Amino acid sequence: NAGVTQTPKFQVLKTGQSMTLQCAQDMNHEYMSWYRQDPGMGLRLIHYSVGAGITDQGEVPNGYNVSRSTTEDFPLRLLSAAPSQTSVYFCASSQTGGSEKLFFGSGTQLSVL
Amino acid sequence: QQQVKQSPQSLIVQKGGISIINCAYENTAFDYFPWYQQFPGKGPALLIAIRPDVSEKKEGRFTISFNKSAKQFSLHIMDSQPGDSATYFCAASLDTGRRALTFGSGTRLQVQP
Image (cartoon, rainbow over all chains, first blue to last red; front, side, top):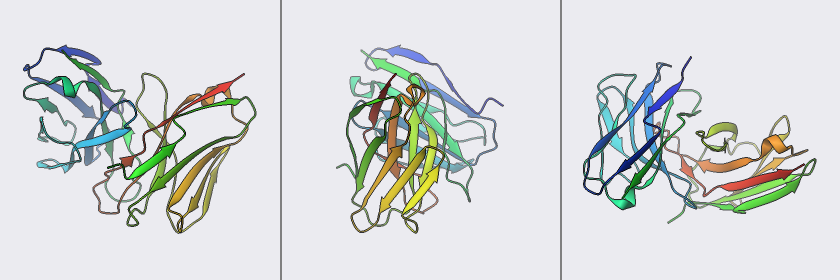
């Protein structure tokens, strides 16, 4: 059981480049989300989805896009990378209803030069 | 604007000692308070969680104490072990189905042998 899989693990971008961070889960979870982790700031919610075709903004959505075409996948797109987006990004999923336990991936460390 | 304030930033405890991490929240509508544990290079993992209808929850060596009137909650790790060395995050959420956690800034715990 792989759980939540994120790719790539590391990425270096130049300012203005675009890229997509991939996230896949094999637990049939309806809820998926993206967080960014910055030193001294904990984790902050970027976007989330409660099911295929449904997405919404979190606390820090600017500069990021998401879509949810399948239950399994929830990619995060950076349209024009900025140095302020240098961070560690975590994807998380959970069942809807009942336990709110979030299952996190192992993260993507992104540097924007 | 940080809705969940966590302290201390770092903590060094001797093996066998008690580790105590504190959190305070502002939004009285929060009704779910989990603690997540994160090892280097890994995503956070749920450790223990509490709802405001109880004042304490214990799971093995880990205990959450909750003070609703003071809007504070804390994690106690009894008989701390070197394997407990990790970063700990408190969090809070509203029961809106969004599964959107507001995280504290994290505490880096080091348990010395």
